Image (cartoon, rainbow, N blue to C red; front, top):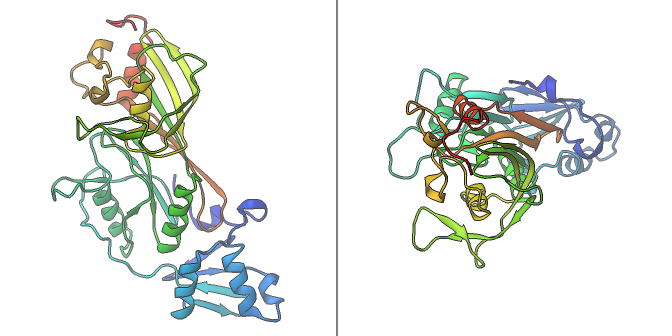
Length: 331
């Protein structure tokens, strides 16, 4: 789904009041705050209060824009220099499929990450990543946008990834992530029958000193909380939907393995293989984990944005096989 400013504007009142409707004109955003500014005796003071309060502009960015004449008042219109030209920061890589866009406007981009594709380079200097594909998408749209992902997914996990398209959005969304204001709903296919009483896994996660790539539940690790919000018991396992309160490396994989229900295909954490569920060899195995939904407050309007990402074909096939009643194993 792709939305323009007219579809996200005028969300008026309540905790998501934000900056309201906007229009982009080149490097400038134009908005009309209304009588709160036009009726004020000291328009600059009223404008600063509106930007920092109602619109929620980060103070550091507000101060810089003031210094650089990036905040202007023209008649009844506010002009903000929010869209200056920026280098992508990573080379564009063109592929036939390209980046699959789930949502886009002047502030945000959400794209689907397929299995087997890392979000960003690992430092080795080789391999195409989602960031490379996003750089190509931006270039095709005219360029001038830095590639800045707000969160990550494991290489073999599928789902939506959120990108900020300007500094304003990046500052606001980074803060939302730190404050747990971005909701991420995942679907996983796990081994065994997950009991109804297992609704929260609250267990700190740290590095596994015996295996560089692994994480483990450890008393000295970082706080990690995973909520199980829905489950579907099937003959060959359980489909669970989960919400993260924290975002530790491999969190869902570690927590479910620790609870005795590793993800199917997750060899690193002891999950049964897809072949034992009757999935043919032609389908590559991976951990059965998919980001199903992303919900966040729009950086400018503060209106809730909900982006769904349908299950990929391999997960649908796996679910069909463990639910068919003729699996090669029972747990």
